[in-house]
Length: 290
Ligand SMILES: O=C(O)CCC(=O)C(=O)O
Image (tube, rainbow, N blue to C red; front, side, top):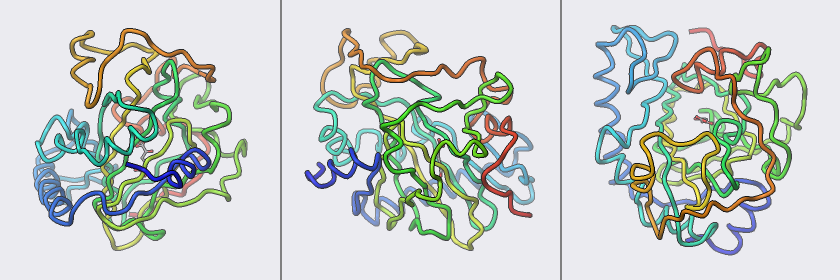
């Protein structure tokens, strides 16, 4: 569970880092399983249901940008969605009833891992209230040099910004509008085995990884059980209720006074945030030469 000081920091900044949540053995297992996934990507020439590939991927030099929904593909990832220490942190923020959404493993590999442009997760999946957060498990030490998550403090209390380009959702804010002070952003750094928790409305991004160190970051989306997605959910109520990881489900969505913009019409390029964001004309981060 979180201390009162951690809760205060989360509410003020919109994000926190909690150290020592996973043991070194648990981190080692995640790394080993992930190495296996990356090795198996060598047979691919394009994205599929499991892999999102770097633009520079070739079968001879496999470059995975993201493993999609890893909790569906290996028990080592699946266990994390029910990790008692992680759930206890979320219960400190929202009370007993917690529902999982989905997961992704952003690789950001040494030397070429892609940037993620500024965005609010809320722009992708608005709900009836904003008790939602992404928990990131740091599988490697995350330092300034290898592209940690950057957060604009306090942005979770502000508006939901436009994430469209030429009338179509592109999953990114236009940095040339300077709607936020990006220079004030704080990095979420920590040792492997730490987690970060960032509020669904917090504006965040990460730079390319031009260092010689891996930056594997396993992100899981959670919500209070009474936050219901405005765009619906696939699979019906039975599948939705199977996502409960603590406490009780509810048929009474809690409606909060929150700003909403729908991510419609959908991005031209589907498959991952990296593909969606190709629709953004003005980039904040330069793409490193490969
Ligand atoms: O991996 C990162 O640094 C950013 C992840 C993120 O914001 C996302 O995938 O939505």
